[in-house]
Image 1: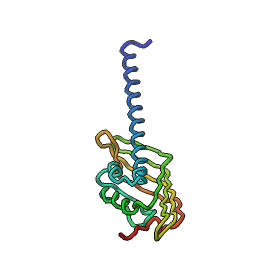
Image 2: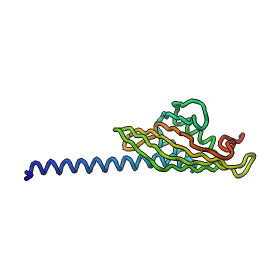
Image 3: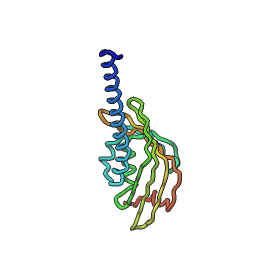
Image 4: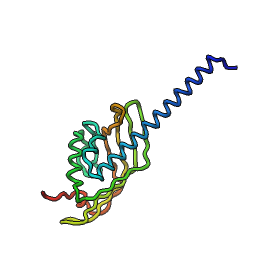
Length: 171
């Protein structure tokens, strides 16, 4: 037979477990939202909103797409680079799926599958470029929210005219 004190301990442990599970679900939901909203803001060309999802500095590794070396950079510079490359006339579509989220305290890592395209329909250069890959995002908890502190893209396949991805008109 279980006594009142033991019953209270069991009920307390169950309450803590429920709180922990609810907090984890809330964290996972927010982390997934941040990663997805990076893509949404990019495609909407909402650069101010995009910047909100990043820490001040970010570890960026797009070497499997563009060569070079992984870099630690200011998030403002990353956003400005995307703003320049994904200018108004260049249509883009980014999609992320199959999120696998690992949380350890105030840090998180998200693995996801990715698809994106860039499309130019008018002008000096026209065509479509597509890419499929795996993304790993790292995030840090910051005052009741999560912010992206790192992105790594592993390209699996790309097709189309790579000039579309790289083309920026002269102003």
